[in-house]
Length: 335
Image (cartoon, rainbow, N blue to C red):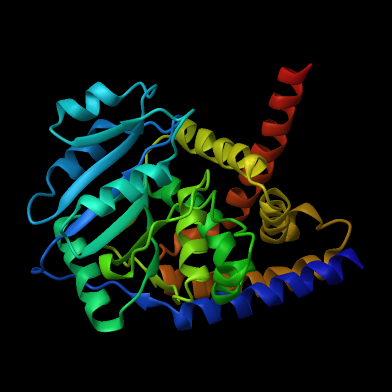
């Protein structure tokens, strides 16, 4: 029975990923525009490396890049030393959403991108967003690609919360749902016209606050992929990858929904042929067949390297191992 259930889940994720892929728009490179207000949200536990800051520093007028940083973040001085504009706030009194509302109200720019830390892009990427808004209106949820100078690390992280979100949940249903499963642990951006803005409701997670406000105002939010213009920055060493996986499980446990359960279930689906090979050999090989079809579609949709197909089993086991390690670590702290 267990094998049959996971077989159905595997087939279902193929349907979901294709449906989300067909409805999504693509960001295309552009060279001109009026400029975007870019708000980068840095959480207390987020660490940004020097090369990322230099890349953000290179984005000049007409764009306006600003960082929202908690007062107790250890890298405030480092960010300011690069000439980047920051808005510090007391996280015990205010939230990222409060700061976002204040920044949007003050800007004269008509296009706004709000994103997580360590999503890389260039000036031409932002002009591409402007063009997409002009052609298709919006707002849009932007799903970036995974990029690293280490190809193995990149391929290992191609199984990630963003992919889990798009494999488990129909995007249109996610936007309408009260609980935005996976949104808090995903690394995404949201961009829209200032004319669509109305003060976002306060929520500990800025993404949930924005999406819920648009939903309450009956504004349809669409999905788009970043192509090669927007990417999640990954450090090229295994330790950084392992820490990133562990932090994902920690954030999932803090989310007020069933994110941990859903992500764990998706991880088991990804790794079923290895985990249950001896117990359910028939279903293991059948699910492996459908997983290959599934990964072929993800390679096409997200322009992944073909090496991801080879490293898929290792990646799924890494996610499962990081989940177990995270629970052991927190159990030890509790003891």
